Amino acid sequence: MANFSSQGPVPGNLLVKPDVVAPGAQVLSAQPAWACGTPPCWAFFNGTSMATPHLAGIAALVRQAHPDWSAAQVRSAVVNTATTGVLMHPTTGEITNDGLIVGAGLADAVNAIGAKVTLDPVSLSYGSVPAGSGKSLSKSITLTNTSGSTKSFTVSVADDAADGVTYSVSST
Image (cartoon, rainbow, N blue to C red; front, side, top):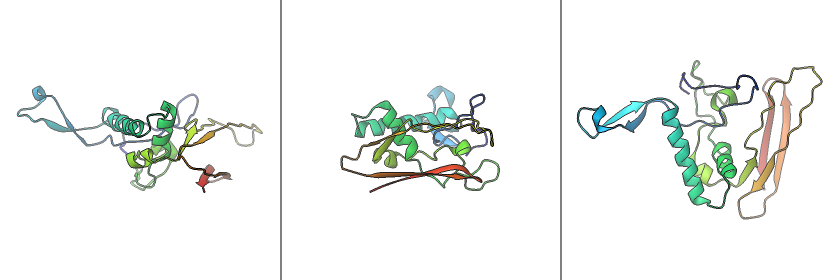
């Protein structure tokens, strides 16, 4: 992760962000002929203006492969099939899966196209819930089987005091 990348939680409502990440640092990109000495013109650029086209392109590929999917299903496929365990913390250099830094992980076009299930909403954030407050929050999520064959899904949620709430989904 680039040290200039935005991180969560979102100020005010404390929602988890980003949803997913894409290459946005040192991306080789074309530039207009007037901006360089001799065409063809290429340069390395950084920022959201580099990551956004990657995500838009992945979404377009998913949409092409699945023209009947809704925008929410395309978004879910991109976010929930991201590759984990490959991004480094911007200050420590250690591999991190911290959702407030890398979201669901690094977007992966092949995985997104091959998604077998979509989630609505794409992710859940509970904001701030003070420990010991007795406050209880409940949210629902809908899983849609997009595989074209019968599947059973098992969802488990665990409260791990060290890492917060964790979940897993498996299919058969």
